[in-house]
Length: 119
Image (cartoon, rainbow, N blue to C red; front, side, top):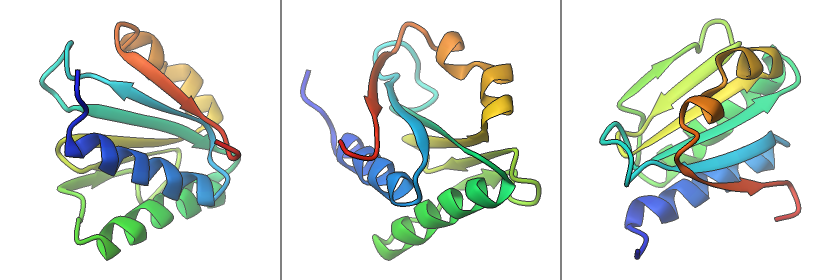
């Protein structure tokens, strides 16, 4: 299956998150299992300040590429920030919230790529 433009954009978002040392970055391909989005990106930070830095880096980088989120949630508390770019939904968690909500388990049928800072 060829990868759409949304995959290239998703990879840009991954790179933006990694610039702020996001942990355990995963890119989940939902195209064959759901119409909710093409991709989910999940990662986590160590604290509310770290989550805020990751979310702001993604927002700023995407804005520089001419894209703004259609919807965003969690910007006031930074336990779980959701940035919805329609085809791509970015989830930036604090680790405890990520474990609790378990999106990778819920979307376990998705093809998953993992990324670390050196990838």
